Image (cartoon, rainbow, N blue to C red):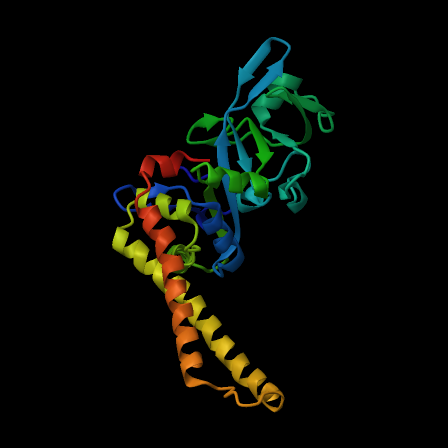
Length: 299
Protein backbone atom coordinates (compact mmCIF):
# COMPACT_ATOMS: atom_id res chain seq x y z
CA UNK A 1 0.00 0.00 0.00
CA UNK A 2 3.04 2.26 0.12
CA UNK A 3 3.30 4.75 -2.76
CA UNK A 4 5.81 4.11 -5.53
CA UNK A 5 9.18 5.79 -4.87
CA UNK A 6 8.88 8.04 -7.90
CA UNK A 7 7.93 11.67 -8.46
CA UNK A 8 4.12 12.19 -8.27
CA UNK A 9 3.28 8.47 -8.51
CA UNK A 10 -0.45 9.25 -8.80
CA UNK A 11 0.23 10.45 -12.35
CA UNK A 12 1.95 7.22 -13.42
CA UNK A 13 0.10 4.55 -15.38
CA UNK A 14 1.02 1.28 -17.03
CA UNK A 15 -0.41 0.73 -20.52
CA UNK A 16 -1.37 -2.77 -21.60
CA UNK A 17 -3.39 -4.27 -24.41
CA UNK A 18 -6.52 -6.30 -23.78
CA UNK A 19 -6.77 -9.48 -25.82
CA UNK A 20 -9.67 -11.90 -25.98
CA UNK A 21 -9.21 -14.70 -23.46
CA UNK A 22 -5.94 -13.29 -22.13
CA UNK A 23 -7.05 -10.59 -19.70
CA UNK A 24 -5.73 -7.04 -19.63
CA UNK A 25 -2.07 -7.37 -18.62
CA UNK A 26 -0.56 -7.84 -22.07
CA UNK A 27 2.38 -6.06 -23.73
CA UNK A 28 1.92 -4.20 -27.01
CA UNK A 29 3.33 -4.04 -30.51
CA UNK A 30 5.87 -1.28 -31.19
CA UNK A 31 3.51 0.09 -33.83
CA UNK A 32 0.85 0.63 -31.17
CA UNK A 33 3.34 2.25 -28.79
CA UNK A 34 4.54 4.64 -31.52
CA UNK A 35 0.95 5.62 -32.37
CA UNK A 36 0.18 6.42 -28.74
CA UNK A 37 3.49 8.26 -28.30
CA UNK A 38 2.82 10.48 -31.33
CA UNK A 39 -0.91 11.13 -30.94
CA UNK A 40 -1.98 10.84 -27.29
CA UNK A 41 -3.15 14.19 -25.87
CA UNK A 42 -3.59 13.10 -22.26
CA UNK A 43 0.00 11.92 -21.69
CA UNK A 44 2.92 14.12 -20.70
CA UNK A 45 5.40 11.40 -21.66
CA UNK A 46 5.42 7.68 -22.47
CA UNK A 47 8.20 5.10 -22.43
CA UNK A 48 8.62 1.57 -23.76
CA UNK A 49 10.71 -1.09 -22.09
CA UNK A 50 11.67 -4.72 -22.53
CA UNK A 51 13.08 -6.82 -19.69
CA UNK A 52 16.39 -8.60 -20.26
CA UNK A 53 18.84 -10.73 -18.26
CA UNK A 54 22.33 -9.95 -19.56
CA UNK A 55 25.51 -11.58 -18.31
CA UNK A 56 28.00 -9.18 -16.72
CA UNK A 57 31.66 -9.93 -16.06
CA UNK A 58 33.46 -9.13 -12.80
CA UNK A 59 36.69 -10.17 -11.12
CA UNK A 60 35.03 -13.31 -9.76
CA UNK A 61 33.64 -14.44 -13.11
CA UNK A 62 30.25 -13.74 -14.67
CA UNK A 63 26.85 -13.03 -13.17
CA UNK A 64 23.38 -12.77 -14.71
CA UNK A 65 21.66 -9.52 -13.76
CA UNK A 66 18.13 -8.16 -14.09
CA UNK A 67 18.01 -5.38 -16.63
CA UNK A 68 15.85 -3.67 -19.21
CA UNK A 69 16.01 -2.10 -22.65
CA UNK A 70 14.26 1.26 -22.34
CA UNK A 71 13.34 4.17 -24.59
CA UNK A 72 15.06 7.46 -23.78
CA UNK A 73 11.99 8.83 -21.98
CA UNK A 74 11.87 6.00 -19.42
CA UNK A 75 13.36 7.85 -16.45
CA UNK A 76 11.50 11.03 -17.40
CA UNK A 77 8.23 9.12 -17.10
CA UNK A 78 9.20 7.88 -13.63
CA UNK A 79 10.47 11.28 -12.55
CA UNK A 80 13.91 10.07 -11.43
CA UNK A 81 17.41 11.09 -12.45
CA UNK A 82 20.88 9.49 -12.31
CA UNK A 83 22.97 10.43 -9.29
CA UNK A 84 26.04 10.26 -11.51
CA UNK A 85 26.41 10.95 -15.22
CA UNK A 86 23.54 11.53 -17.60
CA UNK A 87 20.20 10.10 -18.66
CA UNK A 88 19.45 8.54 -22.05
CA UNK A 89 18.69 11.00 -24.87
CA UNK A 90 16.78 10.67 -28.17
CA UNK A 91 20.13 10.11 -29.87
CA UNK A 92 20.56 6.87 -27.91
CA UNK A 93 17.31 5.51 -29.45
CA UNK A 94 18.37 5.97 -33.05
CA UNK A 95 19.27 2.92 -35.17
CA UNK A 96 23.01 2.37 -35.21
CA UNK A 97 23.64 4.48 -32.11
CA UNK A 98 26.44 3.16 -29.84
CA UNK A 99 25.21 0.92 -27.04
CA UNK A 100 25.46 2.62 -23.63
CA UNK A 101 24.55 1.59 -20.08
CA UNK A 102 23.15 3.10 -16.89
CA UNK A 103 24.00 1.11 -13.77
CA UNK A 104 21.65 0.38 -10.90
CA UNK A 105 22.88 1.39 -7.45
CA UNK A 106 23.55 -2.14 -6.20
CA UNK A 107 25.42 -3.21 -9.34
CA UNK A 108 27.51 -0.05 -9.07
CA UNK A 109 28.41 -0.94 -5.49
CA UNK A 110 29.03 -4.60 -6.33
CA UNK A 111 31.23 -4.15 -9.41
CA UNK A 112 32.87 -0.79 -8.75
CA UNK A 113 32.70 -0.35 -4.98
CA UNK A 114 30.84 2.94 -5.30
CA UNK A 115 33.58 4.52 -7.43
CA UNK A 116 32.32 8.00 -8.32
CA UNK A 117 34.62 8.07 -11.35
CA UNK A 118 32.82 5.12 -12.96
CA UNK A 119 31.13 7.23 -15.65
CA UNK A 120 33.14 6.87 -18.84
CA UNK A 121 34.44 3.42 -17.96
CA UNK A 122 33.28 0.32 -19.83
CA UNK A 123 31.17 -2.59 -18.60
CA UNK A 124 31.84 -6.08 -19.96
CA UNK A 125 28.42 -7.47 -20.86
CA UNK A 126 27.59 -10.50 -23.00
CA UNK A 127 31.10 -10.49 -24.44
CA UNK A 128 31.12 -6.83 -25.48
CA UNK A 129 32.37 -3.60 -23.94
CA UNK A 130 29.60 -1.08 -23.16
CA UNK A 131 30.39 2.51 -22.02
CA UNK A 132 28.76 3.53 -18.70
CA UNK A 133 27.01 6.90 -18.95
CA UNK A 134 25.24 7.06 -15.58
CA UNK A 135 24.34 5.55 -12.22
CA UNK A 136 20.89 5.50 -10.61
CA UNK A 137 20.32 5.99 -6.90
CA UNK A 138 18.97 3.29 -4.55
CA UNK A 139 15.27 2.67 -5.16
CA UNK A 140 13.00 0.15 -3.45
CA UNK A 141 9.94 -1.13 -5.30
CA UNK A 142 7.61 -3.62 -3.67
CA UNK A 143 10.04 -4.13 -0.80
CA UNK A 144 12.83 -5.20 -3.17
CA UNK A 145 15.88 -2.99 -3.11
CA UNK A 146 17.68 -2.72 -6.41
CA UNK A 147 14.71 -2.40 -8.78
CA UNK A 148 16.88 -3.01 -11.84
CA UNK A 149 20.60 -3.66 -12.06
CA UNK A 150 21.17 -2.29 -15.55
CA UNK A 151 19.46 -0.25 -18.25
CA UNK A 152 20.32 -0.15 -21.95
CA UNK A 153 18.71 1.95 -24.71
CA UNK A 154 15.89 0.39 -26.74
CA UNK A 155 16.83 1.48 -30.22
CA UNK A 156 14.04 1.83 -32.77
CA UNK A 157 15.31 -0.88 -35.13
CA UNK A 158 15.69 -3.32 -32.24
CA UNK A 159 12.12 -2.66 -31.10
CA UNK A 160 10.84 -3.48 -34.59
CA UNK A 161 12.94 -6.66 -34.62
CA UNK A 162 11.22 -7.72 -31.39
CA UNK A 163 7.86 -7.43 -33.14
CA UNK A 164 9.13 -9.38 -36.13
CA UNK A 165 10.06 -12.16 -33.73
CA UNK A 166 6.55 -12.18 -32.23
CA UNK A 167 7.62 -10.34 -29.07
CA UNK A 168 6.25 -7.09 -27.70
CA UNK A 169 7.29 -4.14 -25.54
CA UNK A 170 5.62 -2.88 -22.39
CA UNK A 171 4.81 0.77 -21.77
CA UNK A 172 4.46 3.20 -18.89
CA UNK A 173 3.34 6.80 -19.06
CA UNK A 174 2.93 9.99 -17.03
CA UNK A 175 -0.42 11.75 -17.22
CA UNK A 176 -0.60 15.46 -17.89
CA UNK A 177 -1.56 17.52 -14.81
CA UNK A 178 -5.31 17.45 -14.23
CA UNK A 179 -5.94 14.45 -16.50
CA UNK A 180 -7.79 11.55 -14.88
CA UNK A 181 -7.12 7.89 -15.52
CA UNK A 182 -10.63 7.56 -16.97
CA UNK A 183 -9.89 10.27 -19.55
CA UNK A 184 -6.61 8.66 -20.52
CA UNK A 185 -8.19 5.22 -20.73
CA UNK A 186 -10.89 6.45 -23.12
CA UNK A 187 -8.35 8.18 -25.37
CA UNK A 188 -5.94 5.26 -25.41
CA UNK A 189 -8.74 2.82 -26.20
CA UNK A 190 -9.67 4.89 -29.26
CA UNK A 191 -6.05 5.12 -30.38
CA UNK A 192 -5.49 1.39 -30.03
CA UNK A 193 -8.66 0.66 -31.94
CA UNK A 194 -7.49 2.92 -34.73
CA UNK A 195 -4.08 1.24 -34.86
CA UNK A 196 -5.62 -2.21 -35.15
CA UNK A 197 -7.86 -1.09 -38.01
CA UNK A 198 -4.99 0.57 -39.88
CA UNK A 199 -2.67 -2.41 -40.30
CA UNK A 200 -1.72 -2.92 -43.98
CA UNK A 201 -3.87 -5.61 -45.52
CA UNK A 202 -0.98 -7.06 -47.50
CA UNK A 203 1.02 -8.09 -44.44
CA UNK A 204 0.08 -11.74 -44.35
CA UNK A 205 2.21 -12.55 -41.33
CA UNK A 206 0.71 -9.73 -39.27
CA UNK A 207 -2.76 -10.97 -40.09
CA UNK A 208 -1.69 -14.45 -39.03
CA UNK A 209 -0.59 -13.12 -35.65
CA UNK A 210 -3.93 -11.32 -35.27
CA UNK A 211 -5.68 -14.63 -35.78
CA UNK A 212 -3.40 -16.24 -33.21
CA UNK A 213 -4.48 -13.58 -30.74
CA UNK A 214 -8.17 -14.36 -31.21
CA UNK A 215 -9.40 -12.46 -34.28
CA UNK A 216 -12.22 -14.11 -36.25
CA UNK A 217 -11.68 -15.06 -39.90
CA UNK A 218 -14.70 -13.08 -41.06
CA UNK A 219 -13.49 -9.98 -39.19
CA UNK A 220 -10.08 -10.20 -40.83
CA UNK A 221 -11.52 -10.55 -44.33
CA UNK A 222 -13.85 -7.61 -43.75
CA UNK A 223 -11.01 -5.47 -42.40
CA UNK A 224 -8.82 -6.24 -45.41
CA UNK A 225 -11.61 -5.56 -47.89
CA UNK A 226 -12.63 -2.24 -46.33
CA UNK A 227 -9.09 -0.89 -45.95
CA UNK A 228 -7.93 -2.08 -49.35
CA UNK A 229 -11.00 -0.94 -51.27
CA UNK A 230 -10.82 2.55 -49.79
CA UNK A 231 -7.49 3.02 -51.56
CA UNK A 232 -8.82 1.40 -54.71
CA UNK A 233 -11.84 3.71 -54.95
CA UNK A 234 -9.69 6.78 -54.28
CA UNK A 235 -7.29 5.70 -57.02
CA UNK A 236 -10.08 5.03 -59.52
CA UNK A 237 -11.72 8.38 -58.79
CA UNK A 238 -8.46 10.28 -59.28
CA UNK A 239 -7.78 8.28 -62.45
CA UNK A 240 -11.17 9.12 -63.96
CA UNK A 241 -10.77 12.79 -63.11
CA UNK A 242 -7.32 12.88 -64.71
CA UNK A 243 -8.62 11.04 -67.79
CA UNK A 244 -11.40 13.53 -68.42
CA UNK A 245 -8.95 16.43 -68.13
CA UNK A 246 -6.30 14.88 -70.38
CA UNK A 247 -8.75 13.72 -73.09
CA UNK A 248 -10.04 17.28 -73.46
CA UNK A 249 -6.48 18.44 -74.06
CA UNK A 250 -5.89 15.67 -76.64
CA UNK A 251 -9.21 16.06 -78.46
CA UNK A 252 -7.77 18.32 -81.15
CA UNK A 253 -5.10 15.72 -81.97
CA UNK A 254 -7.55 12.85 -82.60
CA UNK A 255 -9.77 12.12 -85.63
CA UNK A 256 -12.74 9.76 -85.67
CA UNK A 257 -12.16 8.66 -82.04
CA UNK A 258 -14.47 9.43 -79.16
CA UNK A 259 -12.24 10.65 -76.30
CA UNK A 260 -14.92 9.85 -73.71
CA UNK A 261 -16.03 6.39 -74.81
CA UNK A 262 -18.62 5.27 -72.19
CA UNK A 263 -17.70 1.59 -72.50
CA UNK A 264 -14.02 2.27 -71.86
CA UNK A 265 -14.70 4.63 -68.95
CA UNK A 266 -16.99 2.02 -67.39
CA UNK A 267 -15.13 -1.25 -67.96
CA UNK A 268 -11.63 -0.07 -66.99
CA UNK A 269 -12.63 1.27 -63.52
CA UNK A 270 -14.72 -1.85 -62.93
CA UNK A 271 -11.77 -4.06 -63.87
CA UNK A 272 -9.47 -2.11 -61.53
CA UNK A 273 -11.93 -2.50 -58.64
CA UNK A 274 -12.20 -6.26 -59.21
CA UNK A 275 -8.41 -6.65 -59.42
CA UNK A 276 -8.00 -4.63 -56.21
CA UNK A 277 -10.55 -6.77 -54.42
CA UNK A 278 -8.72 -9.95 -55.48
CA UNK A 279 -5.36 -8.44 -54.47
CA UNK A 280 -6.76 -7.73 -51.00
CA UNK A 281 -8.57 -11.03 -50.60
CA UNK A 282 -5.74 -13.43 -51.54
CA UNK A 283 -3.22 -12.43 -48.79
CA UNK A 284 -6.03 -12.18 -46.24
CA UNK A 285 -7.31 -15.64 -47.12
CA UNK A 286 -3.78 -17.02 -47.00
CA UNK A 287 -3.27 -15.45 -43.56
CA UNK A 288 -6.39 -17.12 -42.20
CA UNK A 289 -4.81 -20.48 -42.98
CA UNK A 290 -1.54 -19.73 -41.16
CA UNK A 291 -0.88 -21.92 -38.13
CA UNK A 292 -1.03 -19.51 -35.13
CA UNK A 293 2.12 -21.07 -33.62
CA UNK A 294 4.01 -20.56 -36.86
CA UNK A 295 2.81 -16.95 -37.06
CA UNK A 296 4.01 -16.19 -33.55
CA UNK A 297 7.37 -17.93 -33.88
CA UNK A 298 8.42 -16.89 -37.37
CA UNK A 299 11.21 -14.33 -37.72
